[in-house]
Image (tube, rainbow, N blue to C red):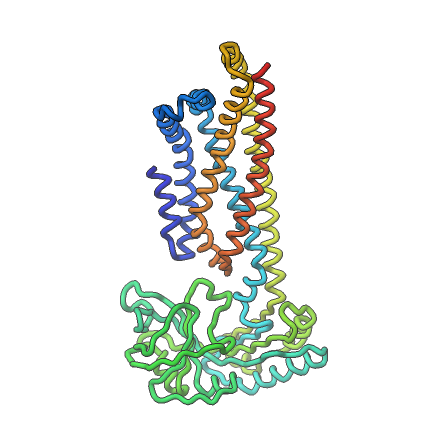
Length: 460
């Protein structure tokens, strides 16, 4: 009760994805210990309770099966617990790996902001607006020459800085105790209007905002200044949510001008914000355009910033496409799916064979006992019912407990999926249900085979 309860408590109470990933194996060990204890000690307790229930116990098939189970359980408890653990592993591996593989498309959409992105970072001391504009022209020209349309394109200039949040109060990281640490991204109103073709105006200490987590307020304190807030909706790429910030929350602010931005995001005794440029492109006709990817590589591979020579390599460059990431995740999750199915089938074969040969060996041991029962008047029908009841319990008890384990682990596994940039509860539920059904069907087939063979042995 203690070990199984502790494992279940960990699985049900954890909210943070990283903590779930770290404590998952702790919960697994506790549940394994609890499962062995449950079958070795708990099963005996349950059988004794059934024996005390006279209405249930004093029926021919129940009397024989419970008596046999009491006799057999001490020998079989460890084997049943092992089969239960194997069944749980089968369900976890197959359902999890298939969920990951089927969610590759959603994972790529969440991990990469646009079909193509070109990022220039660490550019606090330089101005490269003209070079960015020239690169945009090169990209448009190259795509147009290959008849590849652009649905959206923008060059975002923003800065980012770490901050500590306590409700609506944002301070420098490390201040205020164990407050939430997040990334703040800032841009000026002029850049915001240019990127999205808007004509928004802001007053002093008035800010536009949006976030990739739940934050909905009318005002905030940022760096000891009070700001009124207006939420931005439906502007693409406004909230940063790329692969480098999977586990961290981020919020984007638009300030009146560059002076207001620097004043708000330069924390005393801490480093100033880091500025970045990012060109983002979405193609017409959907994602994962391999033809467009080849064009983008050709366009940007020879592009170098003139200013980079004066900064001793401080400026960083990177480009990324959804197509590249789709191939990467497909290969990685496809390999995991293969391993999940291979090990799942292997474990299922092991569990079924252990149970099948265990029942056959016990059939030969029980042959004399059932012969005596038939000699004192037990009919063949009653023998068959008693055998079916006993084999049914032995076969399906591990499966039932494994399904309970899987149901409890559901929440924890979903939390770990977030570390892998995936949040697909419906897909995971569907995959788990299908895995349970397939495993149950296989179990049922072996049950009928085992029950028939066991009966043929004992009736001789």
